[in-house]
Image 1 (cartoon, helix red, strand yellow):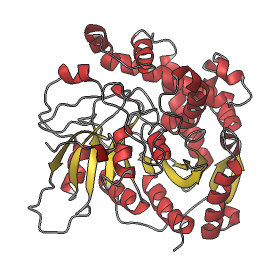
Image 2: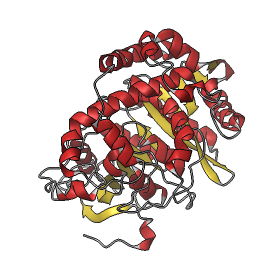
Image 3: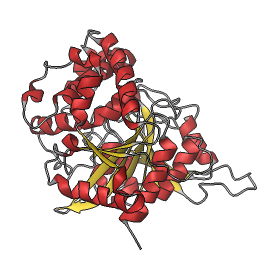
Image 4: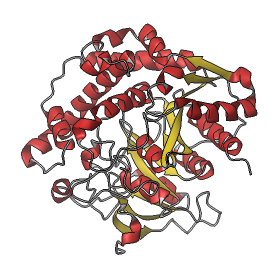
Length: 428
């Protein structure tokens, strides 16, 4: 095992080298690329630590490697180590009281985002060409936006989660990070087993205006950069605007079970239907987390950091009230958004409500920000649609990002669109 150094930005749990299978005579698609993996993936010969020392102590060395890791190794990439994550994947902040908070290379006094914190930092700091993370409630999309890199959450259920410690199976996905859309797509082609490219046939870019209004910074800049690039590539007739909250409220009947029981939705700076959506998502997430890990938490009583401890115990002590309605809601939202987007439509919205918060911010002061963030993140989370977070430079010296979503199974379309868009955003 290689030693860790101060130049590693605190990204790694441990560094090691896993070489690709070099017996192949053909040139492999990921030849010469390096990657890191979140400490939630099984790697043969290493304990999967799940972000908590109590977990690492009570679990054995893995006897096999997760298929997602194997597929990029078999495609020619070299693994350079395992990265730090938030405990039990139960945070989007990126702070870990046991292993330290990986330093955000874009903004060192700000959190890197979680729970795939080290994976994002390893890529943003040029310590790996790409990295594997997981995204349940936002754990790839959030750190990608905070660290100024690309982050892809695939359609739910398309990339194997075998050999990955589960968080909540209804939402768990294997995602990945890269600094540029070419590598993002190369990795995607392997993990998603995509055929060769087809030119992007864009139906519509639908801009969720009410979601952009949630931003705690001027939203027109983000919208203008994105819309301007799409108009340049495909023409202004491809741009549509919608009020996503109203659309969801009108087209997802089961949402009524979750409306009106959350004080944050009464505020003028939130979207009630999306708050209700995130309430349903977090309810089902708690239920599945409890089924996965409740017994372990009760028997071990692990040392958990602030914010995470409260969420873990809230999950462990939760009931199964309204769980059936959550499953119905997932199907309704997927159908409704599928009708909105069609086969070639792409939905644009902010990834998160603003730049990354400062390190060691009191959890209570982040509650409104978290509420808005999960309103946005739950759209892909509950529908199972694919989503990519795209960096759009800096605002007041802090990274900003926008997200694009496409219907379930349209991952190839989204990756190809991002590559084309990037050329327009960054003309040489």
